[in-house]
Image 1 (cartoon, rainbow, N blue to C red):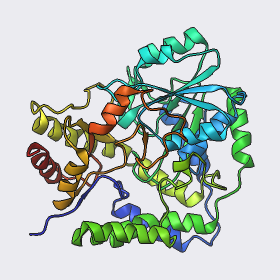
Image 2 (tube, one colour; image 1 turned 45 degrees about the vertical axis):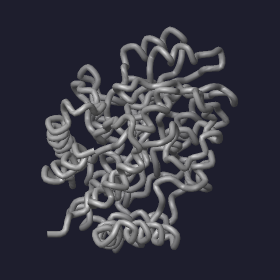
Image 3 (cartoon, one colour; image 1 turned 135 degrees about the vertical axis):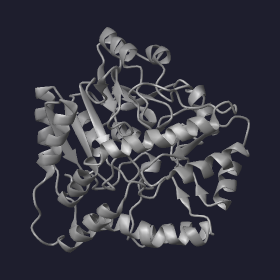
Image 4 (cartoon, helix red, strand yellow; image 1 turned 180 degrees about the vertical axis):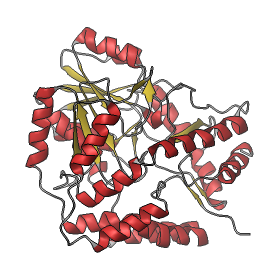
Amino acid sequence: MPLKPIFTSLSPNVEKDDLNLVVRLIFRLFKPQKQQAQILEQEFKQYLNAKHAFAFNAGRTAFLAILKSLNLTPGNEILIQGFTCNALVNPILAAGLKPIFVDIKETTFNIDPTDLETKITDRTKAVVIQHTFGLPADMEKITDICQKYNLILIEDCAHALGAEYNGRKLGSFGKASFFSFGRDKVISSVFGGLAVTNNDDLAEKIRDYQQSLPQASVWWIFQQLLHPILTKYTVMPAYNLNGSLGKLKLITLQKIGLLSKAVSNREKQGKMPENFARKMPEPLVAMALRQIEKLGKFIDHQRQITQIYDNGLAGLGFGLPARQLGRIYLRYPILIKNQNTDKILEQARKQKIFLDDGWRKTVVVPPDTDQTKMNYRAGDCPVAEKVAKSIVNLPTHINISQDDAARIINFITKI
């Protein structure tokens, strides 16, 4: 029997009910839309026990809204961790602020509180804490540091919806937090995100910014609705025939504009996409609401697959993710040291195991991002550089079966 392709990315959370919903949304695209953005915002307020939540077309727009609402001065420094996405860096640049990179801890892939304190200057105004792959950062130490130096704490929860630290939901520790519903996040509406805060004054400014934004174009919405359909019925079958054919089909659909890219070429050069910031379109809100109903199922499934990886890879010398109560597993990251991960992923592709999710090789991902345009200088974060060269992320999403996980383990152990 031919091997079934295994993917880390390509709309991994999409199930049959999501596809049925998308088809209905496409047919209703030119009809009056049911207003559901406030329902999504209310869901998040209740889930996080937060006072305010605001929906946007992307997590990076939500982050930009927070930055523009904080009354910061151009040139102020924002501390962020090494090993992050350019979608985090670009809103900082777009707001006229300066990103400063802090090294990470190899065991957690999260910001190192010790290095964090050494990077603080009189120009530092805020710290962004990224809970990488759903593993909570050391919020106790980080909160103490922010209080000590009077710094604004912002949580990047793009990877961490549903995770907790000491029994408290991530996204509830900082002055503000933001979430992403991108195509490969914990829940997915292809694009979409939320800004959350308990600060009334900040909330008023974020609301004003949200209301100032235009709606997304019908074409852009249609493009996002096509994504789960085309990946499921066009791109994935092409990968099933041949990995190169699948990649060609994906690139072709992006070039002709039927599929959008998760990260644009402009963003890889340190610029936000032109005319990007928008309100969250109602069809994408409907997709997110469907997905959030399944959040508990998604997280339970992640942990079941994680247990299979834990059992199958223990004692083999790989760097395995830290175990921590309350964490979730957007990915299962392993460190394969002293080997060329490009060659490993090439070998995996020959077995129809597509593990390259873009979170590798460089401190600011994806790997073809111009690091200098991100304000990153080689050597600023040596641990992050080392991790980026040795990391391979294993999929945990709802469409990974126990047999798929066993196939991946079998491949990895033969390395």
